[in-house]
Image 1 (cartoon, rainbow, N blue to C red):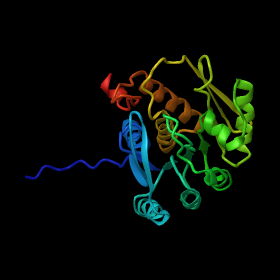
Image 2 (image 1 turned 120 degrees about the vertical axis):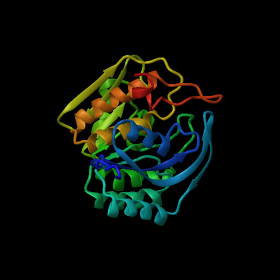
Image 3 (image 1 turned 90 degrees about the vertical axis):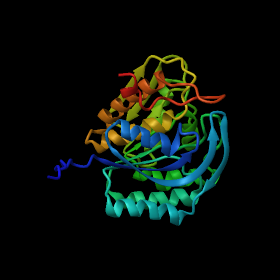
Image 4 (image 1 turned 180 degrees about the vertical axis):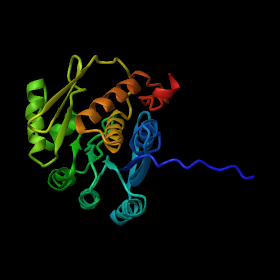
Length: 271
């Protein structure tokens, strides 16, 4: 007798629209690892291919916008989505394409407006910044910039918690439902501000003295999207994602001669 196979329901479905990191620490590779760790089915639309490792980005090659759109539609029209996360979108044409598709998906979206790499390499063309503001951010459930990206998008130079609030207000003026201003580059304890303009959620944690932090932004945004796909509200999803990323940073490990990655598998590797 042929043994029966128990059918299990499919997990929540999350699409990442981002660039590929050949070193495996950030970009789509980090996104898919995070999604697997947090119990969702990760899918991808590759926007750009990068040649990068622990010491820097050595080349970026964008895919044609029609190839990006085709990947998104292939997934959305057949498999379906419960959340989407966007990462590196290097050109104005790519931002426009992804923004148009986000408007049709009808699911929570987490926009990580990647401006520069961990090594300081620029990853967003100058003419794409205004398109991010005017076309992408209005479709974001949550936007998750670090302080360099806040300055790029709003012109606000964040140097204190008070200016974090001003930066968040400037971001919300572009249309996202929630803004998460990540204060990791400030001195002292790590402080982030999540707000929708009326509800402020301050996320505080002891700063970890870790060198190996490649992929933190991608990982946080993907973790938020995963928790939203599970049905969490935005503050709950962000708190849970912050806990996951903090653990991943604490378990980060060396690879190569430069900045190593966070450990996306820390929940099981160190259990």
